[in-house]
Length: 119
Image (cartoon, rainbow, N blue to C red):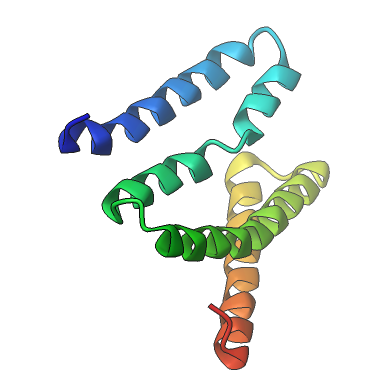
């Protein structure tokens, strides 16, 4: 696989998944939600890093550890958006609240990691 295709392929896969979610939601919200929450972006980003690092196992291990830290604020984003929707907020406000909470949790995690020296 040439370098250009290696770089473009994850983007193409992402686009196809987004299209699949848009189509599936008409038939089953459950299936659309399952597809939307599948570990898709993580493997695609690991693929990109893997090829960029020429398969360096230590670099990939460090990167996947960082991905685990990124799951925490993402989960809080989802909780905040869910609570906002339950409270009757519109999409822009709910997404805004989700991103504010995500940024706050991410900031706290970065401070904790910086203070205690974890990578």
